[in-house]
Amino acid sequence: MNTSSGMGRRALGIVGGAARLASVDVLRKMHDANAAARTFQPLDIAVERVSDIERRASISYVAGSAQHKLRVFDAIRHFEQRGLPAVALPCFDSHLFIDELQQNTTLAIVDMVAALFAHIRQRYPLARRVGVMTSPVLCERRLFERYGENARVEVVSVGFKGMEGLREACETLIGQGVDVLLPGSTDSALSLRRLGALAVPIVDSYSVYAQHLLFADHRKPARQIKLGVVGGVGPAATVDFMHKVVRNTPAARDQDHIKVLVEQNPQIPDRTDHLTGDGADPTLALYATCKKLEDGGADLIAIPCNTAHAFIGPIEARLRVPIVNMMNVTADYLRATFPAVDRIGLLATDGTIASGVYRTALEARGMTQVLPPLAMQARVMNAIYGARGVKAGFTNGECADDIIAAVESLLLQQVEVILLACTELPLLFPQAATVTRKGRSAHLVDPTDVLARCCVEFARGTPLVTPKSARHEALPVEYAAYAKRKESNVAFNAELL
Image 1: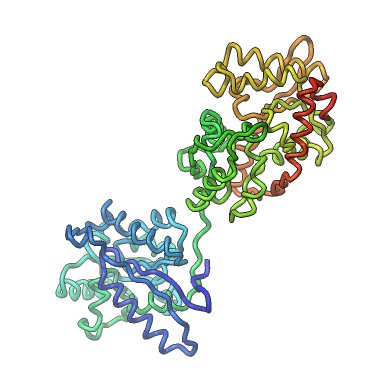
Image 2: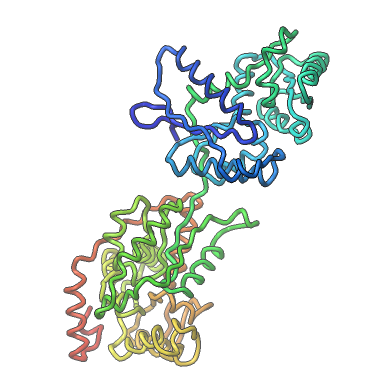
C-alpha cells in the first residue's frame, strides 16, 4: 500500500497515543526534512485530536492497558474512515500492541521501532550491542529485545525516570560496552540536547522516524481475507451455510478460521414471490445488504440463497468486490466430479427454475437440467414454503415426504446426480451423500456446501476464477413460457427442457 495520495502527495495520520508531544516533534522534523530534501513533496498529514470525552474525563493510561489500546485503535479507525493509507505511531508504549492494531485495520501502521533498528544496521553496521534508555514498563516487557533479535544485535535496556535517571542510564549502558545508544521513550527522545556529548553515538529517534515516514514506501502486510455473507435469505439457511464454512476450514485453533461478516436481513422480500407473481422486488434490499458488507471490509460476498442469484447481475456491476456465483461454482464442481454425467436433476423453487440460473450454468458446461413433473414440483414448493415446510422450521414429516416423492420422480428419469438447489433443502438431508429409492440411486449435491468450500479456499489463498454472473435480461420471457406451460398442465421436463 503506497502512502502517496493523488497529485503525488504523501498522506498519513499521526497517532500520539500516550505521547502527544512526540506527535508534535515528529511532525516538525518531517517538515524540516521535507524542506531540506532536493525534491519537495506535498504533505497531507492529519494529527490525532483528543476527544471531548477524554478531555472532560482527564483519562490517563497505563502502557499497554485496555484503555490505552482502545484509545489508539479509535484514532486509527478515525483515520481509516477518512481514507488515509497509513498511520504513524510515535508512541513507544503503543508498540507493545502494534501487531494487534495491524491485524484489525486496513491501514499500514509504520513501525517506529523496526525503522530505528533498520537505521542502526545501516548507519552503524559494526554495532553489536545497542543500549536502550526506556521506561521501566517497556524495560520489563522487553519490547526492544524482541526487535533486536530480528536485527541480529544484542539489546541492553535500562529503565529510568527523570532527567537525572536518563543520564545515569546512559552512563550505565556505556559502562556495559554498548556500541550505540537508542532513546526508547518519549522522555529520552525529546531530551537529546540536554544530554550533551557522550562517549558513544546516540540515535535521534524522532528524526530517524520522521525521515522514514517521509521517504520510505510503507506497505501494509498481507491481511486475512474477510468473507461477507448476505444473511436472512432464509435465516436457517444462513446458519447452515456458516456451519459449513466452519466445517470446511482446516483449523487447529480458533485463530485459524477465516474472518466472516454476516449482514442478517430477513426483511429482504421473497425472491420467488417476485419471480413468479407480483411480490416486491428484492433487488434494492439485496444491493443495500451487499453494500453494507462492502463498507464493512468484505473482500468477497456469498449469498446462500439460490433464487437470489437471479438478481445479482445489476448488483454485482455496482460493487467493488465480487459475488461468488453459487451456480457457476456448483456447475464447475459437477463437471469436475462427475465428468461422464450430462443430466442433472434439479430440486429448486419455482423462482430459481423460472430464472434459468442453473440451466444457463449447466448448459455452458455441457450438462442439462432435469426437473420434476409439475405435480412433484408443487410438492417441492410445499416442502419449502408450506405450513409444515422447512422455512416454517420443520425438517421431517410432510416436508420430508414431499421431497422424497420429488426425488423418486427424478430417479425415474434416470438421473445420477441431484442438486438440492434451494438452501433449505439440505436441511432435510443433513448427512446424506446419496439417495436410493426402489432400486435406483443418485448422488446428492449441496450447492451451499460447494459455495462454502469455494469461499474458504479463496480466503486461504486460492484464486477465485469463477466467472461473474450473467445478467438475466431474458427472465420475464422465460418465466412467461414457464407460467403458460404450468397453466396447460404439461409436465416440466417434457416441455421446459
